[in-house]
Amino acid sequence: MENTLSIIGAGRVGRALGRRLRELGWRIGAVTTRGEASARRAVRFIGAGKPHAGMTRQILASRVILIATPDDEIGVVAQELARIGAEELRGKVVLHTSGALDARVLDPAKACGAAVGSIHPLQSFSGVAVPSLEGRMFAVEGDSRAVSVARQIARSLGGSPVKIPGGRKVLYHAAATMAAANVLAVEEAAAQLLISIGMKRSQATRALLTLTRQVLENMEHLGSRAAWTGPLSRGDFRILEAHLAALQDSPEEFAQAHEVLNRLAARVLSRDTRGTLAELEKMSVKKKTKVMGSNAVNNCRLKSKVQRWQMVCRW
Image (cartoon, rainbow, N blue to C red; front, side, top):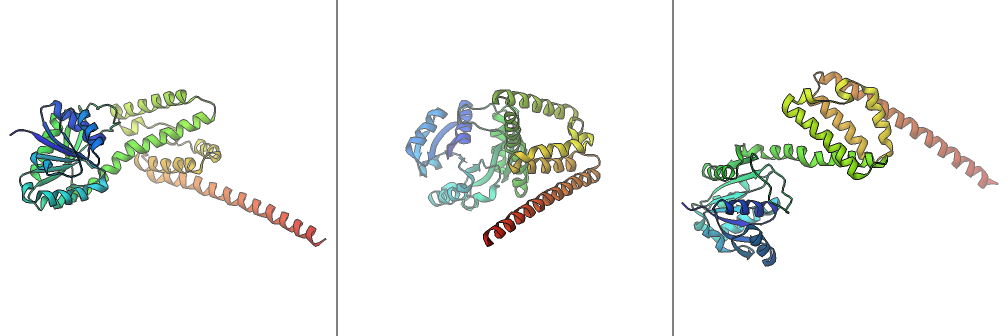
């Protein structure tokens, strides 16, 4: 059976998958976006397909329909697909590429006889170039026939399909977000701290990425606990207190993140989780006491100034 594919929502992921599959011999049918211009750009990028602005029955000419829209639009697309396709969806395979939503969002298409599922490559897409998907993990779930097609697509792209439970998919996405977007936020915060002490951005970025890569390589080869480094891994709480004191001149989120990340490290990396968390809690209490004392002093000073001003006003 010929591999035919229609794509709804040709953004970064849709365009990249469409182009790779076209190179592997898939016949690309309808490429649907909100506007004609964006659909044409997507077709040029993919190298095949027919551009369409909005939902069209031409989508139904393909055996596989890939929905690569933003998450909050997938359910609406599924409803519209059921409306225009009805019984013609029977025998089709409808997949979406959301990392957080499972196949249930495609229930309107399933009610029309389509096999539904999801395929999510654990890979970031810049939109500039098509990344290599060799060795990348693809999370797949849904109806058995949809999962079979999703696995076929993943393997043809050089990836490794892993079936995950649909009801727990959002937890999978939370893990991916922690390892990608949240790590990026931490790296940028660290870069800004180095820039604040006089480093150039290029120097800060290079230094931090070298350090981070080394830690991740150690994690890969030695395991997480053996790769763990820094003052908390050595139980050096005085240094951690110094960190927090130094961070008081930075936006409050910096110190807050530092404290939360230390507690997270204690939870997932420390061999003495309870003892490490107890020491971190002592630090937190000490910090709060200092802050309250400082606020009390400031309030007293303010009260004294007000009283002196009131005495002057009486004269």
